Image (cartoon, rainbow, N blue to C red; front, side):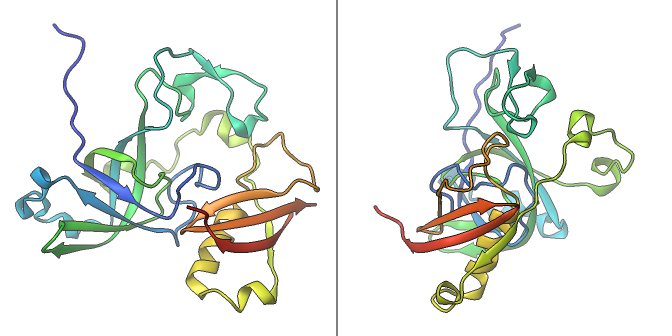
Length: 231
């Protein structure tokens, strides 16, 4: 039996993240983040989407396209464990895997049928980079996929990162409320590696074609500036 098979890209995601810093570490953590799934021409047959609108959430199977490597390591260093402790790759969701595949559960907001792009899925809560290839979509089924008493392994002992976010009135006055809400949600999750805690360091994040800079001191993130992203 052959140990490989052909896997074909069916779609890609369009979202506000042009670089990986700031992308939520898991899907669903920032519910305000909106995105669209655009399908390849051969997969735009409306029949393939029949009854999908009856589900509130879907699973995305996708590729860590920026983390493809020739070799793989049996252990990795999860950022949430400080970046120093190694653990087995199969006990993590690290992008550096034998096969760089990701799995995300996102909310299906609506299906839009367009003339130019065919069916477009509008979703929220994604944790993907703009342009990420998607290989399959499956419905989230609550009675089978939800396990309330599941054990979270080492993640259960890791404190959930939370920052207070301070955005000055001068910045608030220049941007729309929904954009600022997304920025706040992203930074609240603390996108910094766990081993970085320098109050003088200025962090830069690209989101929605804008460059956002901020500092973090004593669990408070202060947004310094928001400007148009350099092309």
